[in-house]
Image (cartoon, rainbow, N blue to C red; front, side):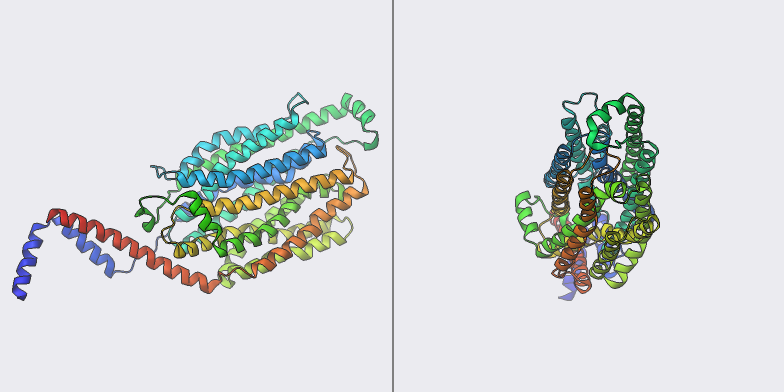
Length: 529
């Protein structure tokens, strides 16, 4: 009997071509040998990380300087400026899930599913960004001009950033490699904010922005000033903003080219086996019902709002409340440089002590320094010390959300193993909630300045305006940070849970790979026999 079985097996083996036999031997050998980890080279990680700089450079320049540009350079009244800021951010928030929806419907191409969005949005985005900082000669439709190109740019940069953010899940199947690439990305993104702050701040800071000594008599003062030195200074300031915009878009293009040439998308093994992508609205329902995701975005919603309030009002706060009209760009640079140098520290810290611990310590460290700014009188040296210390907390706020989102997506994939293609939904809706809330906060803060009596182009501001700016930069962020940290108590994915998810996902990938390979071999074997 054994001899008959062996003879039958030998005759069947003789029917098989050598290629199938070799494939079977390779598969058996692979199953015996442990799989090697898929590692990204330093070059791959750097090319991926460089792609995060354009969004941060432009976002930093707009966040820190657009409000003061609209009020004091374009000379838009505070109410109209609040409309531009709110509608622009709200529209930006709306485009994130819209672009996420379109990406989820995109098919894989030779370049991938995400890369075509990055390639085709870049040229149009740099044109729109440049025109935001151009003051048209006509005054009738000036508000519409800035609103139109602001919304257009935010749409196009979303077509760049949402697929770039989702790319985190497609550069490697190894969680440790994704975390490492995320740390590279966060470092370069903070460097992008440094570049945006340095380029915009230093170029614009060299221009002599004219102001009115007596804002109450603005009608007569403006008429006289426009005939003399004020007109020349204002023209120089406008040209400085255009020069800064040109420098930033040049770096934007270079970073996009490096990203496209240096990074390749990779599909999950179990995703490649699925024939049809999940419908968008079904995927959206599943994502929004995933508890860890809701708790994560709720916590980061409040902490992000805190830092965005500081960002949006910092230039006006330094100029009018602290009286450092010629120093605010250097203070911004101190914050961003401090954040850049502490990103590696926070990456080590979250690896050593866990991500939730890093959230509590990193973000809460800003609170004492915000209190100090609220209590002290105007002192340049103390302000620089506070700026450097605040940068440490800014680094944690940059790194942690993007480091924790992949953990939530991994947890979702374990609970919904057949729900592939939902990564853009996770990233786009996280950005949606953050941007919409920031639009509301910026609109409300600018309206608050209007109600307090803000004087356009004034060399100084009334006491209520100074007090309002101090509350917007200190007390309001403190309250938001504390609320966010309380919500993080509900976040369920700790280090033990992450380790369990990692092992389960690795088993799922190995099972999918082996089953996919065995299914192919079985089909070919059946056709031959």
